[in-house]
Length: 131
Image (tube, rainbow, N blue to C red; front, side, top):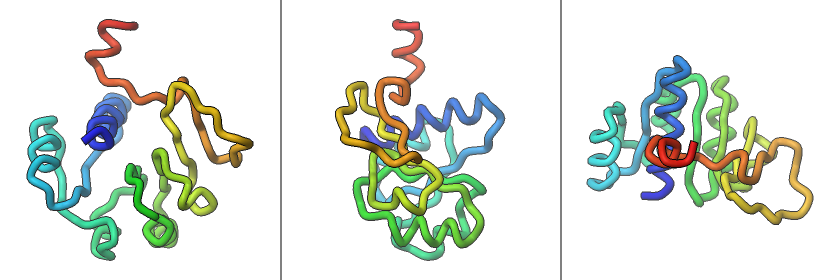
């Protein structure tokens, strides 16, 4: 649920900036309830399901620990921009990989990897308390 929570925070910020947002989620009751309560539309679609590409918008954020190499390749072939959170399995094919860790002690990172405190995805409640 932590992955979903930070995706909801990211989605709220994207909407504030004028980007339409929708979710593709696994068939999980807790995930459906969480996204629905946040006010976002969603479709149920497993990450490996090829039909999911047709449901995706022009930009796609993947936040999963699974190997997403094949999915990223599919999305890129269909003309989408692809951003991956905290997962280096598709660093070569994705447009960017974001590692939202306040302390990142990785070795040399590829040029498309953005890591560290500057990229932590925070919710509105935290921002209200700690501007």
